[in-house]
Length: 270
Image (tube, rainbow, N blue to C red; front, top):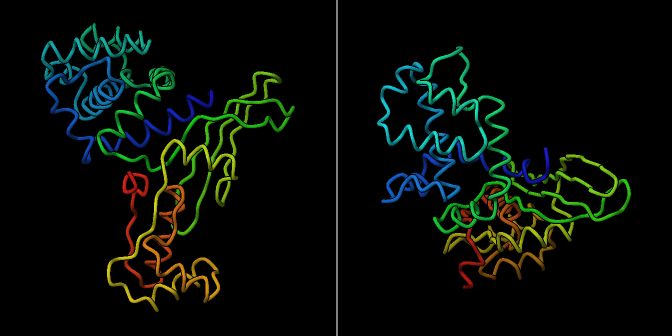
């Protein structure tokens, strides 16, 4: 799996849930939905169709769709290169008992297709107000095998009180390909790429939070000296960084008894 396909897999995994929540649930209500020129519309259409297949018999799935929905789903499958699934659907769902619509081969086709439309997908999702849980982006980094510049997908996320980051790398020079997982913040160069793609986020204590409690939480959570905590506690935002870093800070402040919220600091400044 290429770095682009690996990042696409993370996006699709999150969308399986996010398309049923605000704000993405509203996409289906759009006057032009499904507009298959929009990657998000195409993905939602196919994920919905897969849900229908799983909830009904194959014949029931076909019978309960209007002709326009069938044609749209067929068009979507053909666009991503899922010919076997399209053929099954065109034949009315006849065939073996596998969930052919989004079986392994079709999922790989969808991963590959989304990998070529990541920028469009990210732009639409952001415009609608959704923020990815895993802030992944494409970048370059030194190949660990030969030192040449390699293509990579990198992402960080907060899991409880920890920050974890992930990379998927492919080197065209020597053929090295690897996927790695780490605990801790992103290395500085990769962190800058994530900040550039997703902006800065902040951990912001609730208005009126007792300063003494904030200072104590900052000291315990981040190892600040009492003097540093005193200065930091009087600022608007306790921690500004990647979304994962700010999420970790919110979790740690709340664990210290301080009500805190995650804030899009880039949006606030703009």
